[in-house]
Amino acid sequence: MSNSSNLNAAKVTNVRPMANEDAKWLQLSKIDYVSPDGKARQWEMASRRTRPEGTSVDGVGIIAIIEKDSGPEVVLQKQFRPPVEGVCIEMPAGLVDPNESLQECAMRELKEETGYVGKVLTTGPLVFNDPGFCNTNTVIVTASIDMADPRNQNPQPELEENEFIEIFTLPLATFYESLENLGKQGYKLDARLQNIAMGLKLARLYGGK
Image (cartoon, rainbow, N blue to C red; front, side, top):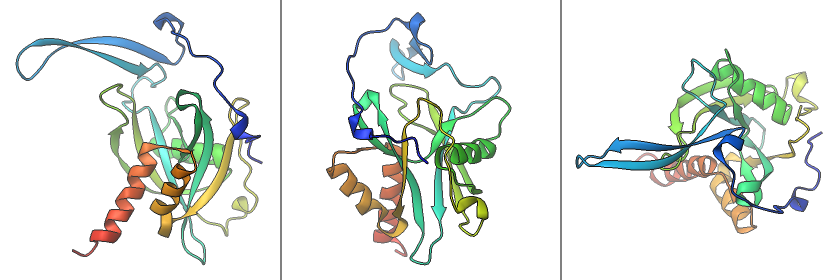
């Protein structure tokens, strides 16, 4: 069972500045660099402290597809995210562990967050989430979920004590429209997910041209 509780009951109660030395997961840095016009300039950035040594990848996102007679569906999740003060619509995702391949990470995170056992279909290129602000990056992995597999008949997420996630699916055929409707309802849309949905919509509009 998803450890979702009442996601709408979650709320931010206070926001305050934090010194860099007090941060457990993040590192703030000031960059000195030379711009294309030859001038010395500075930039402020954030980075994760969690990237394993020996890898250039922070984490993975998983687009997991369930094949159904009515058409393929995408496995998604709802999760309260304090920085945006709201419930986000996201794909399953997580950080890479030391000595773990991207494919292993993706299947582990899919099982932990959704309970589903999947099979990797494709592994995408390294993408940067917000390069004007941080160097955090992701690799998007696509996966299939075989509902004939007995392990997927009653999927049970293996969430940590501080994780509260609600799992749901959306039809791939109306993915863009469904996300747009969720945004109108007040949910916060993960940019990577919305970009995939926009790509699908553009493929429908311009496919074959």
